[in-house]
Image (cartoon, rainbow, N blue to C red):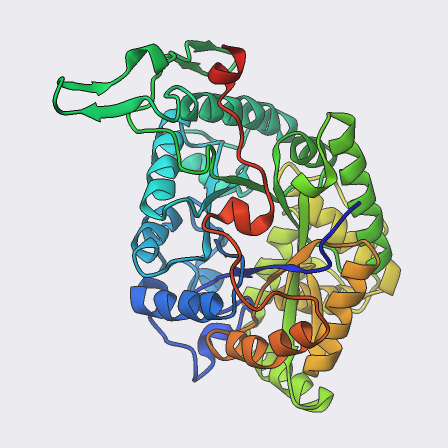
Amino acid sequence: MQRNGELKLGLYLVQAGYHEGAWRDPNVPANGGVDVDHYANLVALAESAAFHFVFLPDSPSVVEQDNASLARVSRNDTFEPITLLSALSSKTQHIGLVATATTTYHQPYHLARMFASLDHLSRGRAAWNIVTSGYKFEAQNFGENGLPDHDARYARAREFVEVVKGLWDTWENDAFIRDKENGIYADTTKLHLLNHRGNYFSVRGPLNIARPPQGYPVLVQAGASDAGMRFGAEIAEVVFTAEPSLENGKRYYTALKEKARAVGRRDDQVLIMPGIVPVIGKTKHEAAEKLKRLQSSTHIDVLFDTADRWLGSVTDLRAMNLDSLVPESLPRTNLIQSRQKVLLDLAIRQKLTWRELICLVSDSRGHLMVVGTPDEIADTMVDRFDQGAADGFNILPATVPSGFKDFVELVVPELRRRGKFRPRYSGETLRENLGLKPPLNRFTKVA
């Protein structure tokens, strides 16, 4: 595959940082989740470093299973991503804006309109992280007792995305002529009703906003189960994955690119960007001490709840002998299957006990974690890029702002010294900066 030799970088932004104990750090704003200036400062720092995008996760529910853990986490006091990124679009000029939104409990028309609006507000910098709901309490917020079956969620998602793309195409690029002299605002010969009838949706259209500046906002996806990989190969332009193992990362990278080629897509139009949790110190010992302080701030109730959730809620961890080895298999979950597999593979490969795995989940949720000096972190990133395990990385700072500031000030210069990261933005839109082609309007193409 032809690559330009430079990494793509995104900032995965959680209000306090990725570590479960981050919010208790004295340098982390206690109310950061509902402070737009806190986010604006972090995004400005990312933009100053020429990051390709900022990425906001989301779930339309609390995810903790009991009040003991719910009382001790900060994630349930934060903005909805599209709303927040709409505000941040006016405070930024170049950086891409990735919002997470589920296909399980939205309607296509709503999301098509909101993401088109964000793309216009940002002048072509919007992206949609397409997810299927994976937390059991989401269903109960929308009148259902439980989540639909895993594969059924992906079947709905596939049709959902096709409807959204169809709505984005219903007006041709130059349909709104806005001719004051003759009193004609829209050229209706360039209007195409979608009239979609499918297994899950019936949508007439048209969308009541012009086609997005990018054609479509960039499509991001994070699934790594069999169904998720098929979906990503067919639809995604950026794939966010969790893989701590270099060899497994190379296999995933190769397999996904092959699947994409099989459906007629080019390698450079499907970018694979795994997550990395950097904990940075001037020495390895200093970095390890930073992690140790975060671990000491994480309550046992949070440790158990977090591990249980990411393992698919299929075990009673409190009933386990914590010093026994994690077994080679667990019951299959209907929740987040890909992450359960990553964590179980990691536990088997490293011969982890339950106690060790529970702590690891709190630290990284199965993402690659590098605790060390700026050189060591840069070494790891460049090695994975050069060996064909990544096109770039989503940076998951353990704490913000300090952990991210360390990355920008210490690691980014090292990546640039090695010729692996750009010094400035090269395009106007997110697509241009990622090297992704704008999609043709399907109706124009047919005509």
